[in-house]
Length: 205
Length: 205
Image (cartoon, rainbow over all chains, first blue to last red; front, side, top):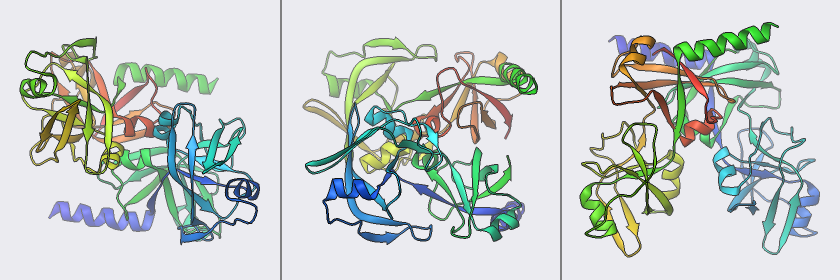
């Protein structure tokens, strides 16, 4: 009886104070220039499936990552094109490739390591652009108001998952262009035992 | 000034209320029977390096894990021999092999998936024994008293690491045969940005 009550309250809390979790696998964002360099002068990114964030999509294109210690093939390209090419890995992937990606928010690539992207005979050697994505929460302005948080704020995220844990230093990003989801990488998703549909509660940072 | 004070207090807290973290990579424990089956009738495990827990050691022997979807080679064997063979993987490893290891404490292998161990031409097909190690804390009786916790209790573990987070459901194990260390797998270690020497503070579960 009491367990059911606690479960019911927790579920209600997670709906009113929480956000759905998503896990992001390793992926690549490409500049227009690098799309051309890898796939040819007339190539364009080919959408195959939308992502949770409006306008973002999984592409048909895949590339191989070549690091100093190893390679990872079949890495998905996400669209649309971006001003700068960026590679997002887990720290586990970094070990396999022989690269130590710093933990950064998307777009913050100054001083980060480089890597080689390959598609068949074509390759692009990046001087920088490899990061481990810093965990973050996309929120609509309405959800940010509901949760009492602001763009740029850091919060803790208590995951209602099979290996429960509370992530610290989770950055809140608010935009009318977002759908509300918290994003983890696969190291983080596995550490908390994430399964699709799991939610988490925001706590003060 | 205030930052320094907070840092000093946190360091003191971690020494008085904390424990050192260690990350455990994928590994195999072998029964005497399986040592013979893999390495030959006169083989014995060859210690090359002691582990933090007294009597436990890294062996010269390595095996390949063969799962339904992939293989992982060069997996370390830990000694001494145990009554039952057991394979400890991260959930990330499980994805590569095509196996879903349940999160269990060491030794709790009833109903877990099997796998094939290979060494050259020799192999052992396990019907069960693959787990993802449940995070846990080894404590000496003196440290358990100091920290106010008992064998079998679950606590939270606030990691003072580069990607700070607080693990829930961390089981305390107390024995005079232990040295005090908290054990994470590599998914968990990467999720918190663990580096050798990092510590964590125990909090009520």
